[in-house]
Length: 218
Figure 1 (cartoon, one colour):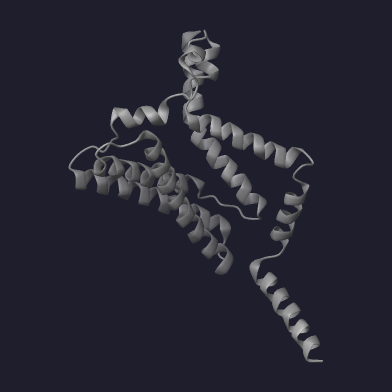
Figure 2 (figure 1 turned 120 degrees about the vertical axis):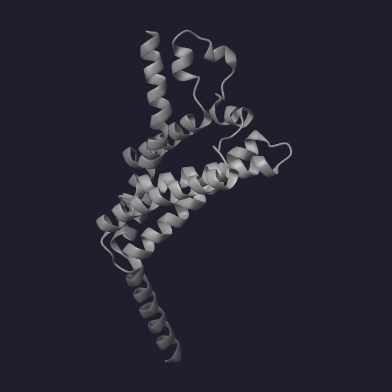
């Protein structure tokens, strides 16, 4: 039983990042795009997030765990935004093939992540890692110790980090947005965006503005 619980907890721990990436890719495909570079984007986000937290701890005299989490999330989001901007520019503006671009982005993101880690290692003269104090903030559970000490259920349900429960909330929101009638307006708007690309929207706006100005002159 102990081995089984340990395996389940390990699966949850290592599967949580994949759940975030899966939800993001589902949202991307809802907009009419297929991004095969999710792994590269996650690699970039992890490397830059680690770098941001590491240098925050190094520069701060008394690093705060909550601030460290925000710094890590910010730099991870920044890396994801830059990678997504590259993908959007190539596939939407330049009309590049989405499959080829996504695979190239996966390789590119992996290279950027490895370069970032190697740069920090060489620059710092050794292995780069956070202190145990900050590691605890990233991994500790948000539930009280009493709930975590419940036999079997405590470890399976209440011993995980904040990010696991955040992923569950986002997954629940996705289910509500796709399996209930509450999100029909949002789904309808998304469908319109999928059909109309930015050039067609600009063309329509130009036509409407031209007709409006013509009527005003008459």
